[in-house]
Each structure stands twice: as structure tokens, then as C-alpha cells.
Image 1 (cartoon, rainbow, N blue to C red):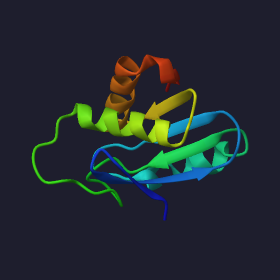
Image 2: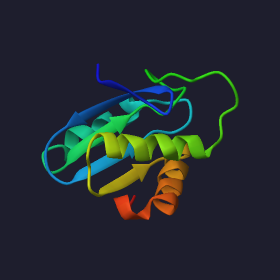
Image 3: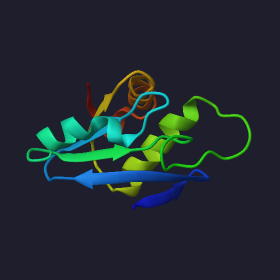
Image 4: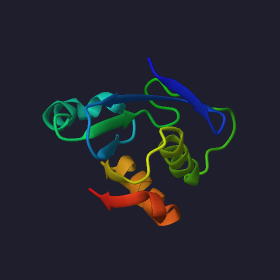
Length: 114
């Protein structure tokens, strides 16, 4: 189970396939498993990265208040940890918000949004 500690949070992530990196971010109250059909369909063409946002799935939630920007900081830190030069982000609901916010705050790392 790949877990990395970033920004004081243990973040769970999975990588499948090879090719240009495509990161999927789940919706509220969901986890990385939400994307299983897409991972299976696209991992022959892309390096698919799924992850559990803080407080979801296998990722931890530190005590205290959560700033919505913490989620985009976590995603950006995961991109850096994985040494990815640029990525395409795909998100649903909360994951869409995280993806959009990450693209706004860290545009140099984001090649596209879905």
C-alpha cells in the first residue's frame, strides 16, 4: 500500500500503466476506488495515478481545521514527490474543485483539466 507523508498527512496513492501522467481525484466521501473502470480502460495509454484526499479512504486527517486549499497543496506535493514534470488532472465533484484549484495555484505543473 503506497503511502507518503506530505504536509503532515499520510496520503495513499496508486499508479498503474505507463505514458503521460493522468491524475484522478475522487469526490467527497469517496476514495481512489471510484475510478477503477477508468483506470482499467486507460492504463494501457497513460500512467494513471489515483489517490485518497486527506480524510478519505486510506489517507489520514490531522486534528484541527481543514483549509480547502490544503487539498490542492497535498495534490501539488504528491506531483512533486512523484517527480512529475506536468500532468493532466481529472476530478469529480470535490475532486473537480481540487483539480481546478491546483491548476490555478500551480499552473506550471498542470497540462490540462478534465
